Length: 496
Image 1 (cartoon, rainbow, N blue to C red):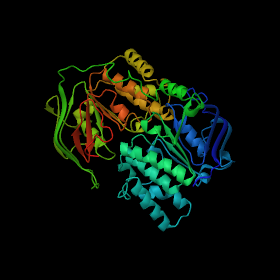
Image 2: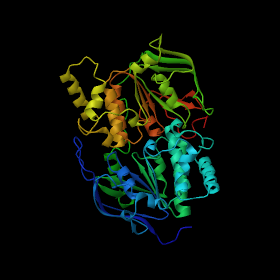
Image 3: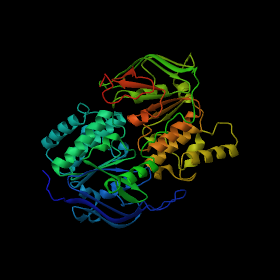
């Protein structure tokens, strides 16, 4: 039961934050006199476009920032009336906890049970209590049975489930979840929203969930909505109509005229580009999953939406199509001819779930230039195309270091890299994660101009409804056809 009188858990007062500038990356103040209050028992969803400062704010609230960032700050952040700056981040572990936007930045252990136990072990909990909490949390977030698995082997959504389960075991007063809805399947998103609302209300907790896209699940009256934009916090209940206009202006909600088909329409007589027959694949040491595809095909110029629950095989299928792994059995053809990994790798552009798996050079220009190295274009034309891509994909500058760019900007850089390369197939594997609708639609639309086949993997039903030519659903390593041009809404799918 919560107290009738509201108790402020988090108070942000006149807070300013500005990262230092670096060559090619001129930073401006992220927060300009930011004010916000979260009371015990409240669940807030804070929306914001990429580069709005959501991730930075979350790390400020836990004491991780400013840390070693050399950022300039002023103002105050209080947890239960105590300034966050009075303690180091590790000393706030009983009061605050965070799930990072990129799970790979947070996971440090080689076993799931070890990862989930870290916080409680540091607090000297007894082994039997840790095991009790672990069993309950792993069961609640559908990762029971994966205790001994290396987190590296989990899907993107399963990694987020692991970190949410770890946070539940820690069970601090203030929960901060940075883009934790992205990469979760529909059931997982729906469960998480209900769970967080109940957690806040029943246990007098404070919950902050950051998101780059407005979802229908946020309509619950128990959820409070805010928008972080231009360094300020805008509260929905203060002016609902203005709030909706701000969401649209920042690309966080969809308008009626948005879609993938505006820039390109595939021909009526589409050529069959790629096919797989009787393909089977199983990961070594993983008895929970096997891929079994009787038939799968891609047509030239089409956008194919691929959906399904976490761990169902979408990424595994994408890795085979892109030539990253060989199937154990089965036949693959490209334009009717048998094809192997090397040919597929040359023919396919794959935008990974985690952009950091693909970005490794010091500057944006070097990342964009790498693929053009053997293109045969002269230097002047290469530089012209690179400049065009920087403008199209809203990248900071040619000299900007990708390692210091936001997660969303690194995603846009992925899109720009493949935009410069002529591929027959482009795969966007949860590429909408951390992006607003406007940025994701822009990436897909620009890639469509290549007249290639696109596979769009996403759990967001709004993304599916933007104009895919076909929708396929995967479940337990198999493919099921959906009605053409439709996404499977809740209750439409017989395999749920």
